[in-house]
Image 1 (cartoon, rainbow, N blue to C red):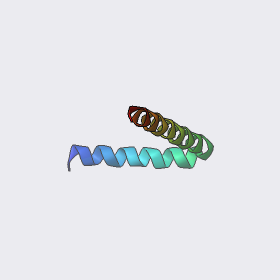
Image 2: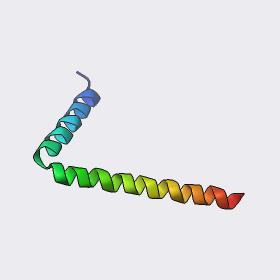
Image 3: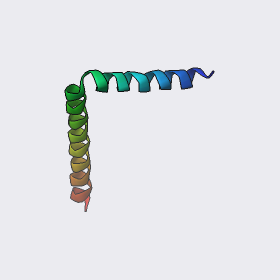
Length: 52
C-alpha cells in the first residue's frame, strides 16, 4: 500500500476521533479557521481595491 494513502487515512481517522471526543473544541477550531480565512480574503480585497 502506498505510504501517502496510509498517512491520509491516519489523518482522517485522527480528525474523526478528535471530533467525536471533543466536539466543542473542534467546532471552535473550525470557527477560528473560518474567521482567519475571512480576514485574509478581506485584506486581499482591500489591497486589490486600493490598486485601482
